Length: 265
Ligand SMILES: [Zn+2]
Image 1 (cartoon, rainbow, N blue to C red):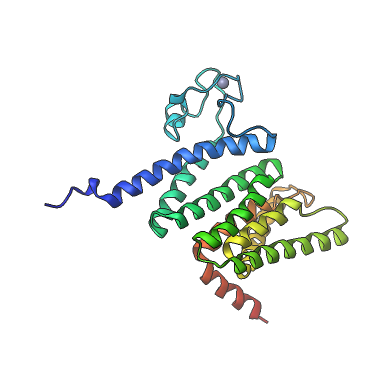
Image 2 (tube, protein in one colour; image 1 turned 180 degrees about the horizontal axis):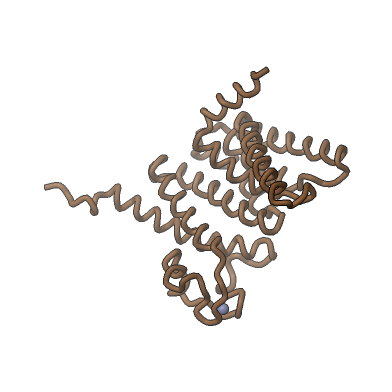
């Protein structure tokens, strides 16, 4: 007799990995809030930013608590930013997706950490215009170790990927500074690109840069349309990080498209 569909091992593993992803998302929210404020991400209970009340465990359940509380603090009615449930949901989706794609194992774990670090970087850079070294440098080293342990990339390819990512953004930063006489690209973006190169290799560094510039340009046009003016600084890391995710998913096809784009007269 075959087991009912809900009890099969695959279904259980998928459901468990999504739940784990949601819980990890809750931790990511702590990282996103505290790292740019130079506070410990492991010590101290979570508090409401509005009234300082320590948040009870039952008000801290990923997604569910947000829905039950209708996005407000139980004590003071402080509006919980939409980014909280969004990060939890995306982390759950990423977790389910990597386990579905790579199977339960080290490679899935490594890619999960990489993708959720990119998620945290996207949100931190968007609101604070910084990329914490803990994530970018830590992520780069984590990628090199992954290349030795489990990833589908050799250590040499991973190191070259980091060097190319770092080098190319470093050059762009220098040229931008010479031309515009202001810092256009922060050191954070340069280190982030070293991390992306460590996981995706040097070829994909160019594709990521291409996709991110395209997204940045579209956003720039939107800003101009809205009347934001051309001086509005763009947090480029917020475009690089999600672009790396897109490239990981659609990488090879993007590379083809990119090469065709270059060949155009
Ligand atoms: Zn409150």
